[in-house]
Image 1 (cartoon, helix red, strand yellow):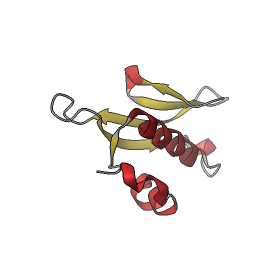
Image 2 (cartoon, rainbow, N blue to C red):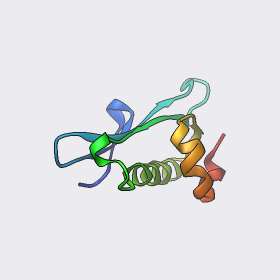
Image 3 (cartoon, helix red, strand yellow):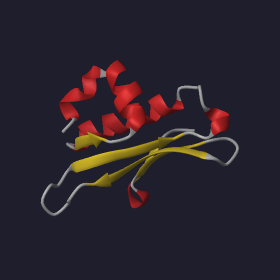
Image 4 (cartoon, rainbow, N blue to C red):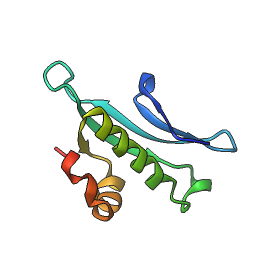
Length: 96
């Protein structure tokens, strides 16, 4: 299943076969004074689907979306900080 952007729930969503979902949650940071500043808060992949690269796929999609939307990203998620971004320096220009 493809990853989709679900702006109503502030997430990027990857539906999985067994009715579980993997997702990356985000939230706007002070939208009145800092439009387009977004916090990437957490990535969740169900235990049964871990180790398949799904978190990285969600992060790729989210950062590509952020680039096209003109977002500045605050990566507060530990996975993004410690595992994803060190291996994907092409996204550092989006970071606050």
